[in-house]
Length: 294
Image (tube, one colour):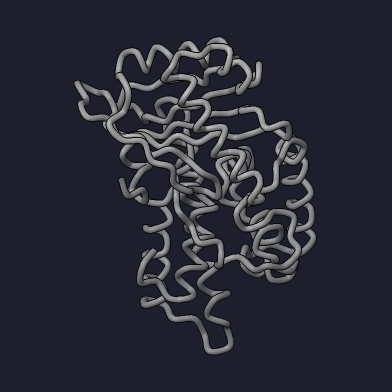
């Protein structure tokens, strides 16, 4: 994202939230500017509005293409250290940091491309109904109907959402550190106290590396998987806490990797309102780690 102008930062943030993939956002912003050079907007058309319209058309096409392609194993968004300053500070349903959260981006995957675009413009970027309709070339009644349907799909996420406050960020860091310490010492009692019964773990290896190819549900299954993994790989060479997608995460690097063992990973967790870990996300696919400096 370095070197982008004010329009570029806004477009990158929009395209990342639309696709959930940093590499896609890079490509879409470049393509948007390329089209701007080929066909400049008319003098009476605001530049940002025109660029937004082009970027959203490209992003919706990218989403439709992705839906047609097979993906090996669970899909997770790309981790990014995104400056949320490209989002207005108005009173919107979803705040800037939350709108790049892993849980939020996963919830968006259940929306159609149009629903996703409308929800982001209206409930994250604070666009008016008229501006949203113009950006997506939809009628204003269609925008209102589409937003209503998108909200219904997001109801499950909204019911359990946890605001990204400094307190939650600190609690997430403590929970992650406690989880890894308990794993390293094989402290089952501590692990049981930290993790919910219905915890879900998603591992994104994209078929490139060995990783669980199905979601892991339930405390016993998730803990067994992680304990066995630690036995096989041993303790990592390096473990570093960094902020990605609004919350603390662990950057993990292994000294040795054989065959298709991932040499590095980014691990994050979601907490419920009681501070228990309800989800664990592990990204090891190289294509998803393009914006993670190890």
